[in-house]
Length: 386
Image (cartoon, rainbow, N blue to C red):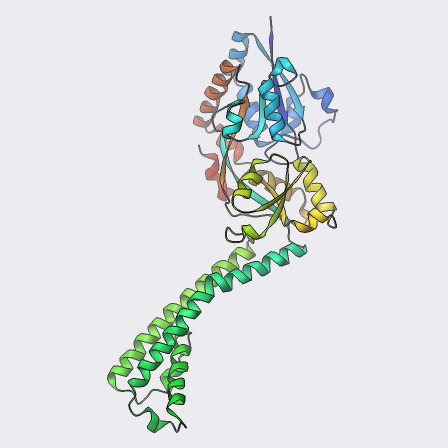
């Protein structure tokens, strides 16, 4: 007797979940649920799954065990609900296997089995640049540049300038003779201000110190060299921060605690970012629905409060390419890697073992690397090599 293996394939609008190939004949999801035409879909997880189940070895396994795959293309709002359905199993109104960008968690491992990791992805942030929240985040970055990059060095240089200015004054026994100051305090002030300006990159001190003794000239020369080093350091630090702002990376690890993101319910990417201090507003929507809601409802209170959407990196890049007229952007910074796997009902150990064996073969033969390179940026291709 043929035993049915019910496979849930998550359909969405991103590059990770399965999506319909443009130009194919469109049927309802119900019509496609059983024995559907597999070439109507594409997506990182789906392409890897298709490579596995279409292999001769997997077909022999199905024949030997008298199994038949029954594919169900489904749209979901919560991956946690999908985990619950796989826990129930295919014989009890659930599924035996789920194909999508699923991740390990200690809670989920109590309910279902996870296959081997087939590739890595990153937690990311999808956002619009032309909204007020971008200006707010830009201001936060400029504030961060001043507080974290400039403030402490400027305080140190000012204090150091005062100390060195006093020392410098003592090295000029005839300084008062050359400058007609009204008081000794003014003479000290000139020395201190000259030294501070030197440390901040001004070389005006040299022109006012031609009567210095040898030890004073050596002292000034050393201070000029030190001033150059400090100046280069400050310029490099500020440039590094400004480069992040220009490269769609306005959400840095330092300012994550100041931002709010939207997310579907039970989304692990959001949970990971939440641990880093991000405030999350959970919505009872699928990722596709949430992206459209975010783009088309700028006056919604939750959308106005948010800086963007917590999403998978590959998924986000695909949505950016499909919304080029919306000024949608994906942050390129790394907020944490995640492992992508499939999940299988705990009573299907033989199916789990066969999936793991085939994943190892696909990795060894570079098939998975070749598939995921079509979805990753060239700079991120190292994520494809497992």
